[in-house]
Length: 417
Image 1 (cartoon, rainbow, N blue to C red):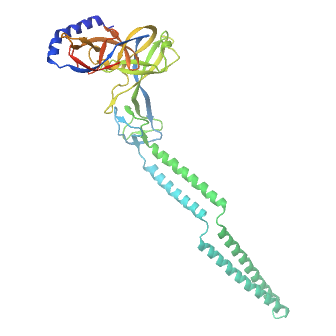
Image 2 (cartoon, one colour; image 1 turned 120 degrees about the vertical axis):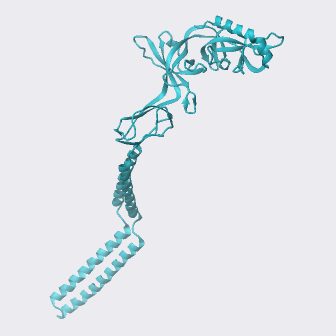
């Protein structure tokens, strides 16, 4: 526990010794202030947790193949669908080309059937039918003439039978030509068109299957994130299901902490909590309780609670990294009066967290910035609980406090209610 009394006395001594010099050398700094408010809230308790990514994907290969390209390294930032590894595709590319050519053939066959007979084909069939009819008429007349000659004994029976046979053949050829003409006019049977459509659909499925296989030869990132581990290299053979890389989504961070059974009833899903990370003392984070696991550890009688924090990423480098130690302040249920200030009033990054309080200066009518060490507690929206040598109604500096020095003269340009 921080000894606020000793720290406050030390800070006070420093700024009192140098306040005169500071006021003489520095002009009054323009600041925005807000009042310290008192609220009755549940007391807070700090619990230790570990930062973990919201999403972690162990990306594997969907097909067997040899790695032709592996353009990633551990720590790299990758976008969704960015290639992580490329497998050799020469053989399957040839198969895709052949399947596409076969698909084109099936499409043209179907088009030919659906378009039906061309006008020239119909005219050709009609001409053949008319020619067959002319031949049939000729043989019909020849038969009649032969029968007359046979009656007058000018033609024997064998000759008559031959002429009758020719007439029958001519009649059959005409019938055949007539049916052929009708078939050309009617076009292909519906059944043949449906068969062609089915063959086209089968070939389309075959092409899609091969293209899907080809796509799977390019292993892509499932979401925006960072490469946390490499599992292959160029030239290595990977089997289906074998790991290629690990990707972490770091735009949000979960903090997993264990909460005792006497405290967990006061923790509610959706509530905002204060989060401090030991490795980032100059930053204060506000998290939201997203998960309260209803199953306790039977040995420790603690319940896993997950708090989600929005991470800061600059130049593809996450501020909060996976595995950092974090401290979260959760309500314990005991009601008491506490002091709250805007979060912007906190000055972070030093050995202790502090705020600047508006205090009368040595000269009449002047005011100065007096530093006070504080410890933070639970969060309530834009306000945060503070514990230190403060009083309700005092004014703390919320803007312009980043470059202030202890005892520096200030000028209030706005007071936030």
